[in-house]
Amino acid sequence: MSNIFSNIPAEMPNEIFEDIISTQTLRIERIVSKGQTSPETGWYDQSENEWVIVLSGFGVIEYANGVKVTLKEGDYLNIKAHEKHRVIETSSDDATVWLAIFY
Amino acid sequence: MSNIFSNIPAEMPNEIFEDIISTQTLRIERIVSKGQTSPETGWYDQSENEWVIVLSGFGVIEYANGVKVTLKEGDYLNIKAHEKHRVIETSSDDATVWLAIFY
Image (cartoon, rainbow over all chains, first blue to last red; front, side):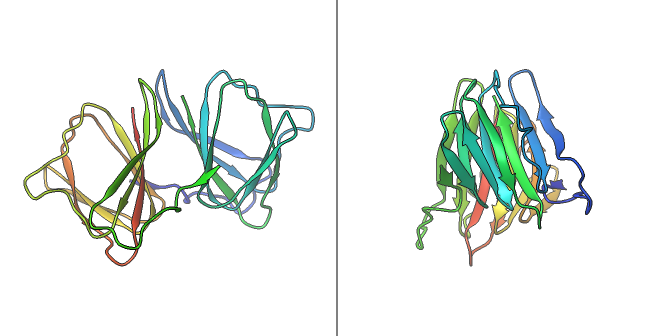
């Protein structure tokens, strides 16, 4: 047994990406952010669908069409493959813990 | 966007099982329990692997070999296909919200 909120360093110069489960058809990933955002120039344009939930903190996702969605604790959404998006804000006080399922 | 903690009725005579995502190779399910347990006589013996995390409340899982694991908020584990298990306790005050990924 493990806990999704454990092993979060106090100092986080970079986001942390960790695979929890990885098979040919599925990846469960923990992402921990602390104020980081996507690179200014970059959109995520993924070949897989992504179901993502915020488990602590918050994050703001922007889609290529300009729509912005703020995800707080327990909020989830499904991002289809090749639906361009980026993270434009994450909480800087406490870590934002994301659980992402790529399928 | 939806929230994993929303739409939980105050009265819950039965557990609630809801598919969030369902494809040929993956199922993401929300399970809400409030004091319910697996039937006395029954073990879950699943053909799929299950990755499960408790997001609120707590639950106690027992394996066929007698090992018991208490899952509290944020705790997760991976139950392999055909690893027999059952739920022998869930919180009765507040709902237990489980997120289960079958793959």
